[in-house]
Image (tube, rainbow, N blue to C red; front, side, top):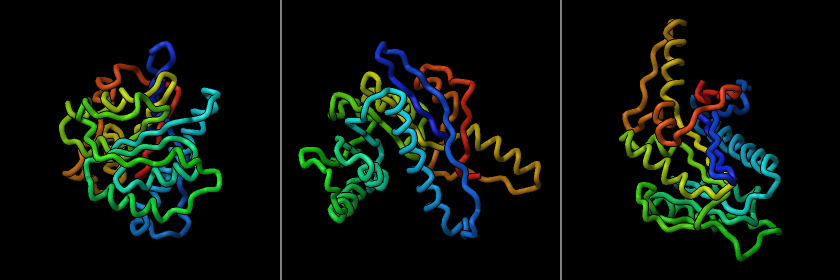
Length: 231
C-alpha cells in the first residue's frame, strides 16, 4: 500500500511526501488466511505512528480527526483508544456499514479519561459532494483504501481535493491507498523471478503518482521511501 502524508503549513503551502512504515516478518502464520488481518494491523500501526509523528513535528496535540470512507469504523475505534478526548468523525456512503459501526462503538468500554462532550460521530456522506457539511477543518484527515474504490480518475482527484479541503492550517492528510506504479514494479520483479503476474481487482482503481500530482499539485520529497504492504 502507498502511504502518503500531506501537511498544510500555516502559510498555506502544501508539503507532501511518500512515507514508509514497519516491515513484517513471517512468524509461522498462514499468511493467506491471515492476510487481511495482518494488513489492517499494519495500517493502523502506521496510521497511529504518523499521528504521533505529526504531534512531535508540530509540537501540539491533535484535537480533531476525520476518516473519509470509514466503513464500520474499525480504524476509528483504534484511533479512539489512543485519542479518547479528541473530536473524531467518520464518513461513508454505506449507511448499513455505519449502522454496524455504531453497534460496535456501543460495545466499547469507554476510557476513564473520556470526556463526554467529545465523541466519535459517524456520518453518511459522499466525499464527492462538495456541499458536505462537517467541522470547518480537522488536524488529521485520512483515508484507508477508500480512493481506490472510485473507478474514475477525475473523481479520484476530486475526492482527494475535497478531503484536502477539510485539513486545518498546520494539519495533515494521510492517504493509505494502493499504488499502481508500485504494483507495476512489483509485477516486473515477479516476472523476473518466474512468478505469476498479479491482476488488480476489477472493483478497484489503484492510484498513480500522476493522479496524486494532479490532485495535490506538489512534488514528492526524494529523500523518503515507501513500502509495499502486500509484498
